[in-house]
Image 1 (spheres, rainbow, N blue to C red):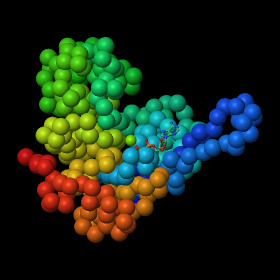
Image 2: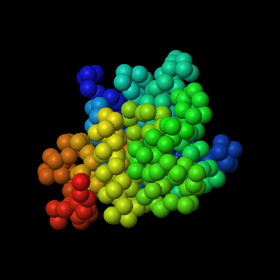
Image 3: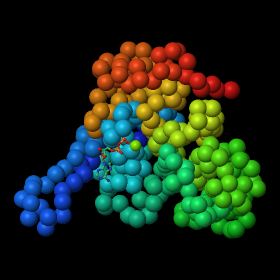
Image 4: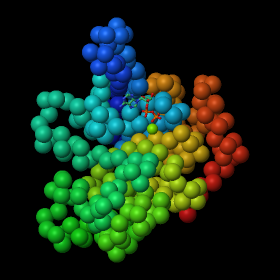
Length: 281
Ligand SMILES: Nc1ncnc2c1ncn2[C@@H]1O[C@H](COP(=O)(O)OP(=O)(O)O)[C@@H](O)[C@H]1O
Ligand SMILES: [Mg+2]
């Protein structure tokens, strides 16, 4: 393992069992049915860098995301976080929790991922309590205020409910919640695909700034190659659960090897025109 490597995904697979319940199969005499949603995928991400996974809908991106942060046990292969095997059954509960704290995820829809009945302050302090990261109510409040400011919101937003915010602000709240446990690695699964282009750029800028300030490592998932171009250091291309191409961002976009990658690039109009619509100020 290289000294700068933070995560190593090694021959990762996920085979979903799509079979009917056994009693139904017994009657219909149909064999078991499986789907290889992720098939033998390997890649590493260096500390402080962004690795983008691109591919069409259904290619296995979100399934890899869930396995990379410890939310879905692989049916094959392994995930090594800074040398710790995330799914090692011999690991103690405590060791597992320690590793899990270092990994967080930001989902596509901040509507679905934020509890609508909780005030923002409560949403942000929950991970602090889960991981026992603050020892008093005042420390908890200070940390919540710090998190809000880190993502460009204000302290008074702690008292409001998710529905009182715009889509972009809501995604900022999701990012603040992901930051609460002071993670080193964040998986962003289509974090801006539900947002308007102008708001997208602001959220991407925020993610970039946080990466610089906090030294974060990202796995960035998207089907939008224009976004990838400004965010990622390396790109992996997924097709039907397999990693078919992997390169530095520039090489992949300038000289894609497979027809599939060429097709993905062609279908990202903002790239072929040479502009991304995203600026960094
Ligand atoms: N829990 C599940 N059970 C069965 N099949 C699933 C499950 N999750 C995803 N799939 C299937 O696995 C494939 C990959 O899905 P996903 O990882 O969500 O793709 P992507 O994020 O690239 O759109 C799809 O065919 C999807 O229908
Ligand atoms: Mg997905």
